[in-house]
Image 1 (spheres, rainbow, N blue to C red):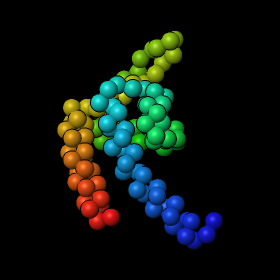
Image 2: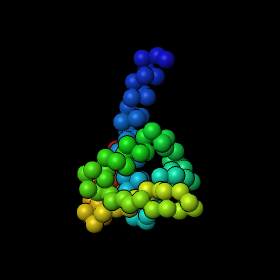
Image 3: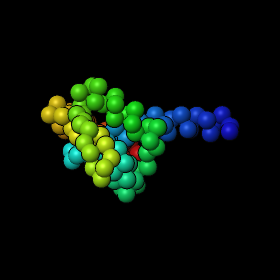
Length: 109
């Protein structure tokens, strides 16, 4: 891998990190467990590895943005996630910020 390739990959991952958080919050306006959340994101063109998704979910829950609960479904225990009431407010604010940034970048480009 060249220096340029390495730099691009680092910048791509940095750009993607914030977008993934926003996409996860958007999907968790409705309750999902990890697998269905990954599947829904992928259906919309946003692939995310389990090794990225689950730490992100734990971090967002620790920050109070998400709430979760364990339930049994099809004889298996699954952890279901959704936005907390604080998370709903933060999602709206982040979405507005993302739209403003996206419009500004579009104008610059």
